[in-house]
Image (cartoon, rainbow, N blue to C red; front, top):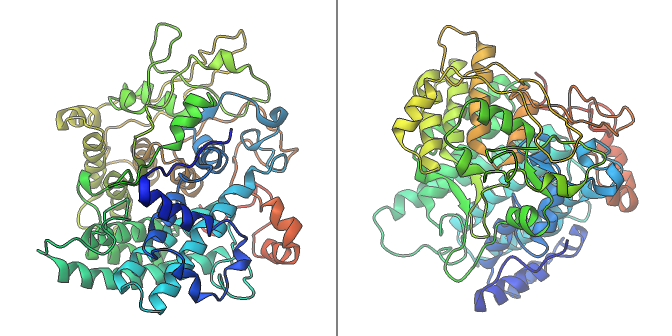
Length: 527
């Protein structure tokens, strides 16, 4: 399942290829070499970071994406389901987290690709080769990348990265350090955004930034939105700090319009290919998941054809598969619904609809979010419909619906059916008289639908809140190490770390709230 690089473009590709080739060594090799940035145009390291920060889209992009995202967050959240039983049925989706080396990939991408590129940018900034705003943008990307990897494993070697010794930090230390870095970046971006207002000149990162083409105001909104996301993530473990950071983020300005979202997409001479297309199409390895099938079909959700293509079985319609099958014949599942993702479909980083739902949750808690929970909840739905090219009238009808999720019907073509009951009875229509727990389920369920296909965030929110209610896997191959009911709470540390960095991993395990298994909860997982 290897594939060619996902960056294809003339001279720009050659420049970025040099940058990428400098990021394949182990992270221990990137310690104290400020001269390393002389090899290429240092600004191209921004592209390198973006291509790997959240969804690997470079080098072996689809293969890395499949192992780091599709067979983890996408499947754990119920967005997508594998249609072949990897490794004889012992793999992440059957909860045998020790059965394969898939758990290596998020760690490897973060610490052999993203962070070395960031370190070169840091050296360039220290040497006066790039300006403070460009470094601040790199800081925002770094924060998003490391939040992703710590939300997978928990402790990671972050605060001393680039030094001779880089021990693992607790997740609490990582989060609080990231939030401090983010605050500094926000302060800088505020100044640059104000100074550049009305200017017609292209910013320094215009040709290498695939997200916002170096636009300071857009990056500032993203930075504050990420701050709000991180604040909400820690609200059950650090409620006072969470409220402080959330209110600061909203005051400084978060995403509010459907066009504010962050998508990784082709820009100028740099072409981005979405790795999910390779996984569902060339590999034929993934289809619609049972959980999103139950919710969106039950709601008769107008976004269904935007997210998936109709199945070619049972007269069409949208049909998915259960996760966690230890045996299956791929041909029986191929006719099910595929993601409506083509090679040129932009890769979602963060959307304004997610931000509205974050504010709805904050407002529900009486935090100062600039409005009330109902308004932000309905705004989140409206924004999601707009982000998917649907009308405000469609959104208005949907948000008044009292439909409930459907029972999941397995439509694969074999004689074996793995159907499941109705996962929840929550409706789209807001109920102001409901208690906070019901309100929370309603908010997170709609946020879950709006965030598709960002499976990592959906999985994290499921672990944080318990919502939406995700349909259980069929076969649990963990030998008791992971609860079918509670589902996977974290990924185990990479085997490569056990082999090459055993003392540090032993220390890292002591920073967990339990053993190195998928049952052990992360620091923020306290609900």
